[in-house]
Image (cartoon, rainbow, N blue to C red; front, side, top):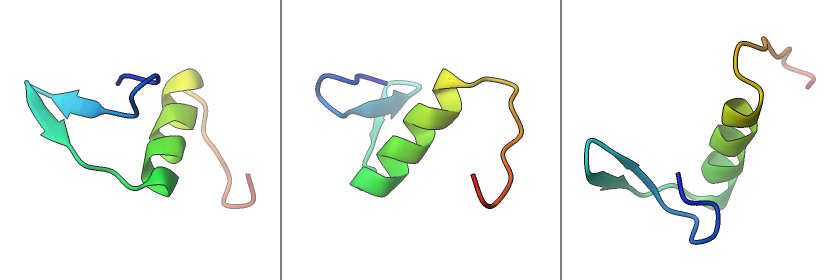
Length: 40
């Protein structure tokens, strides 16, 4: 995940994410192991 360019890749393949999906993935990666409720 490249925060500066908003790019995500896995196994060398770029994954195209919308802004909501990118921000959600970033949030999950910033809090590994945390379980979020639907309200969070």
